[in-house]
Length: 133
Image 1: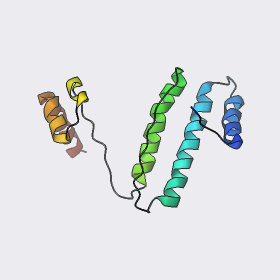
Image 2: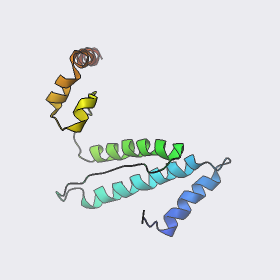
Image 3: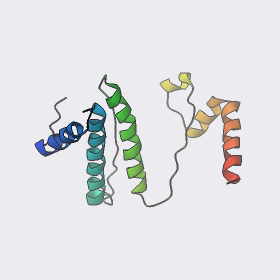
């Protein structure tokens, strides 16, 4: 892919993987995630308030289970880091997106309407549960 890792980062990741008794890929993946999160934190500290939008894309190009699972963990941690950096309350809303709507873009309201009555029922149940806490 043309990605160059500084030798210190490569050594750090391999050292973590070799330090485990089973020498699993999982240790290397978790250390790689830590490296990425630290890099994002440095970027946000240095340029977070400059007004330039920052976006992230996380993809898995591997066929190894540990790396594919690590992709999801990396996304969750980077997302949390980005959202926490805005210093204001935030929330994530999940919608069931109908397969037919994946070919086109919609507003949140349209996605919720396309999801049908079961989505509305789930949302109401979630609101009742949140209100009872």
